[in-house]
Every structure is written in structure tokens, then in C-alpha cells.
Image (spheres, rainbow, N blue to C red):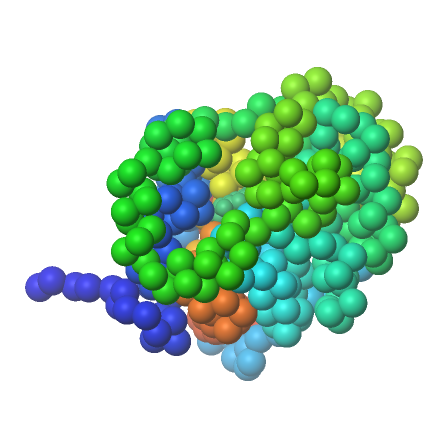
Length: 389
Ligand SMILES: Cc1cc2nc3c(=O)[nH]c(=O)nc-3n(C[C@H](O)[C@H](O)[C@H](O)COP(=O)(O)O)c2cc1C
């Protein structure tokens, strides 16, 4: 029997995140889908982010009569309806017009938090007044410290109270599959251009109105007349900081008044160091398999980090979460919450804000069902006793 996922244009027909991915694949040109999907080098980290979930299996409890589950949780002072935060992802305006705003609004409506990337296409100052809960702001610590400081000041002035500092990019991962879409840096290959022409819906919606969207939070650092997306990418290329060290984080801690979260931690020693420098949270993450290849995946570190430092900072994890039960596994192992990267982006690509809302609703329903099947009423009742690792 041949089984086929739905891969048409109507995102409402998608029954799972995997199916939303097919709808997204149908709408986006190949080079854009590759940017979204791809990992570094041989994509071993990327594959591990998914395969790990098959090795973490449940030992459910029967006959406990739980009733409708409560999925709410407080994370770093935010009361969330679900233990979810949308991860920072750059260049969302290439996926959907004003993609960052669409993601943020869908998150707000679902009662979860949204993280705006340094390389987003929407200005944090303009975004927050449109939301009930201010966005979390993600900072790439740049080589030029003054620019980093200014980004921190802007986020603070915009009303953000969570700064997520990404610490796993002291060099850019080699995303070779992404590079294959180009004949030289930033120049699409002829076959990629042809493929773009075969996606008129995307071309019409995203590119034709104003061309590639600018990096709105970086505008003031680029010379007037040189603020295009291309110039922004070049600027960021010059700002990767291979000398980034703990002392830089201590400095930032001194400047930032709100909660500080370090994203990209992948060992217990660094989790302990995060406590020492005054971080309020960590994101156990391998950057969606896009940085160092062949490394551990966040969820493998959750149990140990929760045992060592879980009482002193919030533990967030990301990488490969595509099902409600994936999220519950992380919570059962000791995570406070999960960040969603591609799961939300597939929704965005498939249907803008309504597509993201659909993705979040699929995950919510899956979580509710799995909680009932596990015999749990609240997230606090999840624990390692339910897991056969
Ligand atoms: C298209 C794309 C862009 C990303 N951009 C950023 C970014 O700007 N800043 C950052 O800290 N992480 C970035 N990430 C990593 C995500 O924040 C997150 O760690 C990762 O996507 C989680 O894995 P998942 O996509 O399997 O959920 C990006 C990931 C993707 C897929």
C-alpha cells in the first residue's frame, strides 16, 4: 500500500507538523526551503535531533482518572498556557511577508512566548506595542561591542525583559546544502533561479512587493543607502566573534536589567558556569543542527543539568521537537520549557499567522491527548518515572 502525506496548498488539512512541512515545501522555492531545513556538514546533529525521540519511550500509568489536563507553566516570570517558546530564527521575512510579526502574534494568541532574532526583519521597537507579552530578544554578541551594547539598550527601551544570548556561533557552521543553492556567495545558481520562477505564489507575495526584506534591528549600524538584506548579511559576516568568552557574558549581565538566558549550552560544566555568571536560564541547544556537526542534542543533557542546576536557573531545550509528546518528554526529564524552531516555521511558510496558529494548535491537542494517555493532569506530575530511556 502506498501512503502519501497531504502536500497541497491548504494548511488547514495538515494533521501533523510533518504534514505542515510538506505544505511548506510545496509553497517555498527550493533555496528557501533548504535555508530553513538544512544542517551543518553531514547533518549528523540535525538527524540526531529527531532520532533521539524514538529512543526515549513512555511507561504510562493507567486508571488514574485525570480529566482535562492543565498545560500551563510559569517560565522566567511569564505565565505560559503551554510550556513553549518560539525560538529565534533569522530572515523570517523571506518565508512570509512580515514573518516575525505573524509568528509573534500567533504565539501571543496561543499564550506562549516569542523570541525575536537579532537578524529578524521586524524592529523590536515596533513589535512590542502590538503584543500582550513583550517579545524575548535574542542577541548575537557581535565583534563590535558598542553595537552589541546598543542592541541591548534598544531591546531594553522597547520593553523586553528577557535577553537570550546565543553563545554557539563563535564561527559560522558549514551548511553545505544551503551553499549548493548558490553559484557564488549570495548569488543564486541558474537552477535555483529557475526554481524560484516555478513558485509564483511565493515570488508574488514575498519578493515582488519590496524585494528581500532588510534586517530592521541592524538598520542604524549600516550606512545610509547600504541597508539592503545583502548588505546586512555582509555586515553580519564581519561581526562573528571567535574571541567570545565568559567575561563578555559577565559584562552583559552587568548591563542587562532583565532575565538573561544563554542559548547553545551543551554540557553540564557550562550549565554550572552559567549559574556562576548570573544567568537566569539556559537553552540546551545545538542550534537546530546548524553549527557544530556530530554533537549531542539538547534533550540528552536535560536530566543531568536539571539535577545539577535545575533549582538555580530555568532549563529550556530545543532541537527537533515536532510532536506534543516530544515536548512532554523534555518536561518529564526536567526541562521547564521547549523552544520551537522549524515546527513554527513550517506553519509560517504554509499559511502565515494562521499557519503558525495551526501548528501550535496541533501541538496543544497532541500534548493534551498524550497527558491523558500518560495519566497526568499537570505538567508537574510528569517525571523520569514515566520514561524508559
Ligand atoms: C531558519 C533558521 C534560522 C535560525 N536563526 C537563528 C537565529 O537568528 N538566532 C539563533 O539563536 N538561532 C537561530 N536558529 C536556531 C533556532 O533558534 C533553534 O535553536 C533551532 O531551530 C531548534 O531546532 P528545531 O528547528 O529543530 O526546532 C535558526 C534556526 C533555523 C532553522
